[in-house]
Amino acid sequence: VRRVLHGEDAVRRLRLRLTVSAEARSGADSPLIRLADLAGPDALEVGAAVRAYLLQTEREKNQQDQGSAPDSAAPLPERYLFEVQDPAVAYDGCRVHVAELGGRVVGVVVLSVRDRVAEIKRLWAQPEVRGRGVGSALLDAAVADAVDLGASQVRLSVWEWRKGPVRLYESRGFERVPSWDGRERLVCMVRGV
Image (cartoon, rainbow, N blue to C red):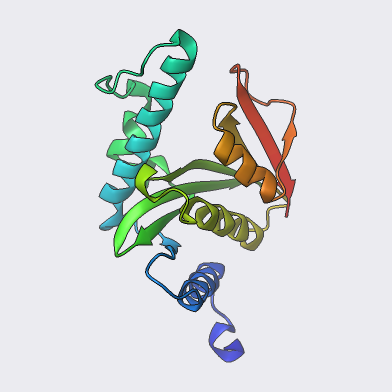
């Protein structure tokens, strides 16, 4: 294995590590995490997953602000359309991973790195697969990628009413810090790598 990895770039090492890890976990219920091919077939899948994430977030924010049932027919705010319609351009310079179960994309995570600080964005697992390790596997892949890219810290933000994700992040060593974002009820978290 060392001879095969010698001279290969970090992406190939990560892809091999994730593939070996996924194969080691037996059973169809284990998610396969891989880098997304945004220049190819994954662009539509990533766009759809990000759209679902953003629509759910907007519905939850509306419900939190107004205390009413979320409007499932509300359109996606225009400021997000670029991410959904052209993820290859929107996430240029980012690492995007997808999670697969049974050959179907069921989750996504976006990682950007600037000045040795990695930021996790758009971590999403489809509601019907939650509790099956998809979010955990995506988070772990993004943190591993941050290490491979030379980051010294990983940060993320999450709405305070999302108790499950907050617990997941805390279980992976993320700690709450003063907000770098002015939006109320947004929890900012960091961890070293």
